Length: 75
Ligand SMILES: [Zn+2]
Image (cartoon, rainbow, N blue to C red):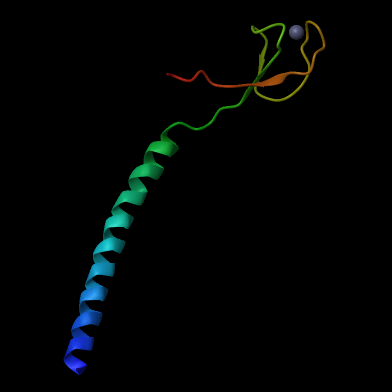
């Protein structure tokens, strides 16, 4: 009976090691692709799209509070 338990643990352990190795090789891959493009936030006026600022403030043309400009998403 003892041998069976040892075998079961050995199989379980090797299975976990394979799973852990598999997941660790996958994780850096996804983080790499995410880190390539840093999210650059720009602020713009809703009335004047030509007004761009890298920090929140007010539009120099109409005094409206600048809103975050969402990067164009490719569909
Ligand atoms: Zn404006």
